[in-house]
Image (cartoon, rainbow, N blue to C red; front, side, top):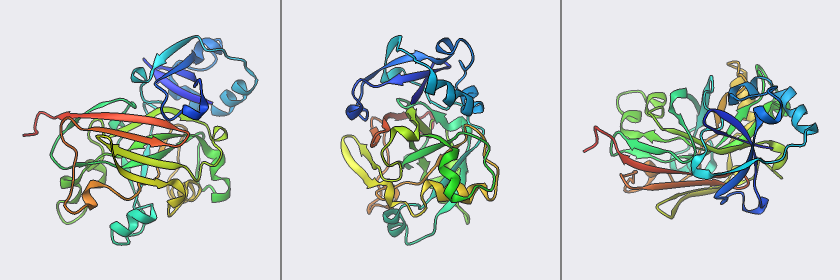
Length: 291
């Protein structure tokens, strides 16, 4: 099952050719609220609040697509998560370039969430890219053992954990949450893909391109802590809720870790792809304060 969102309504997505899911330019969709006779939706967040019932309905329903949407029309699949948790330095290659630091957890603020084809304003000249696989929680999770953690995942998405590096590292202590929560700094999409649609969700190719040049390339198997371990670690400390997002870390190749450093500039196009999950693309323009 793949779920997308357009104009505040949750949609079931059908890709014509599953082998081309990463590059699909348009998709066939069906409105969930209409297909379920009003039982679910139209607000995407209500689907996660009743995920068990929704999954059972989908498993028995026969839903035919009703119209097509261009990928440029899609909005964030999970538009209003209650919480966004994220982890830094969670890929082996990124840990090396970050001088061996251990994974660290922080939060992104929900207003940063935008859709898969967003135009993002650059507040400064030091904004960096971080392609990430994003897990979406399907139910309340607190003190979940790692061996049960995948059963708490509604699905996976492509995400970008954009970061304003100057403010992130200025001062004596890093300011991760503020630097990573500017407007547009949480692109996600293009749709949510349930785990049963993926052969091995723990080992997917993940790639980020800037202006057509590959800047990050790895596999999710390169994570220091996998999705199951991350959920166990986070839920041991704080409760997680249906529809919460978990950004699972970025591979090596961020601009901040290059020599010399490289950052996003007005006119840049960032394209992020995860095998079997699709592609998101952001265009960058100068913010009002950028000179």
